Amino acid sequence: MSFKDNLTPVNNIPGITPKLIGKLRLYQITTAEELLGQIEAEPQTIGNLLRLDDSEIQLLKTNTRKAIPKDILATMDAVRGKQYQTGAKAPDER
Image 1 (spheres, rainbow, N blue to C red):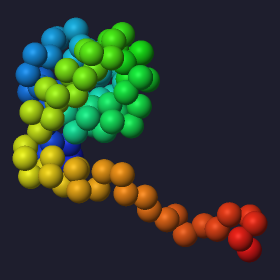
Image 2 (image 1 turned 120 degrees about the vertical axis):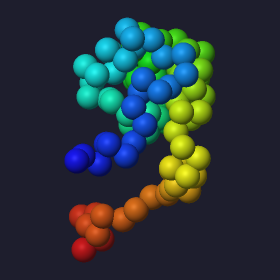
Image 3 (image 1 turned 180 degrees about the vertical axis):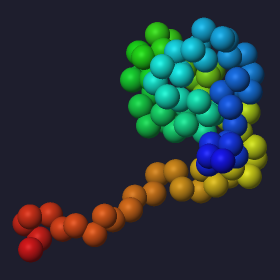
Image 4 (image 1 turned 90 degrees about the vertical axis):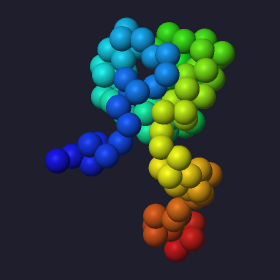
């Protein structure tokens, strides 16, 4: 059993087409949670990969959020924008 078994398949996203699902699979994006993360991290890049304009990406983001269960979405929203330390110091901080 994979951790992905507990996530939302992209084919559960309202309005998503088989063609778009195929493109996502080329980039190993198989869950709505992965897609939402990619859209939020780099909307222009994912738009270029999928050949979608800004308005289409925004619609895809909205529909993707609708597909994700509320408890998972709340967890994703809670950590959005947080920054975490790696423990390494910059060379000038030694």
